[in-house]
Image 1: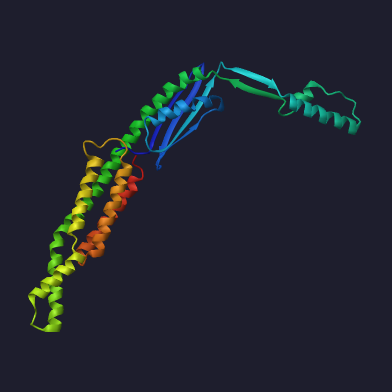
Image 2: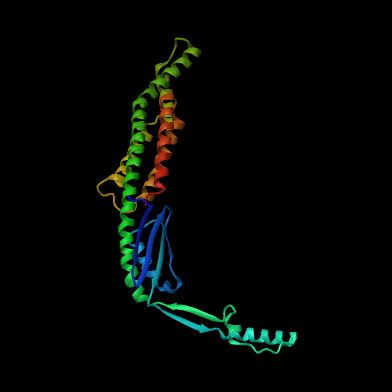
Length: 291
């Protein structure tokens, strides 16, 4: 069982390069990868996404990359359209105000947008620095998700055990249902017929009532779902994303528990239904963070 919550971090700072890679993940229904990196390194996003998709199957995964090459080139260009716009505006201002001073270079250089600078980064060289840092960050990220997953598994397993105990209580009291129905019917017949009770009539009515109030089928299905949950979540073959499968089983468990509660005529069973629903809600809450 793997959690969708994880964290990894790696950095490098030396005379030539300064780089940071940070990876975070949260619960999400599907895999959603978000990359935040300098625009000049946008072409590396696909490679970063591939690395993340290889280790995460579900969750919101965010990666933050900061990179600087201290020897990178700086390209400076003149935006001629902006310059022409300023020259036209200056000419109109001189004519309007009667100013005879010529436009100097410093007038233009002090204006916003005249010069544009862009750092030139070699993407391959940047990747040679970022890739190993991403690997280091993932070496922390993956184990952190696994460790959190183990903690979740222990908590979920304890809640499943509580549900199992409730089902055991259902089984214990299931046999009392027929006896309770029989006694109730005998009491009603006695009120109407006195001592002239037809035992066959009682048995026939008991059979009819059992089709409405027996919880034996629900108990069988609850056992099957609990066994499946344990096998998928905690069994020897429990690998990879299991969150969706376990959530589906929770829906099935919830259906059978609710049916048991609606059919039960025993206070003891109803009390166990409340406890089972409470434990199941705790399971579903934890499963929201399971991959």
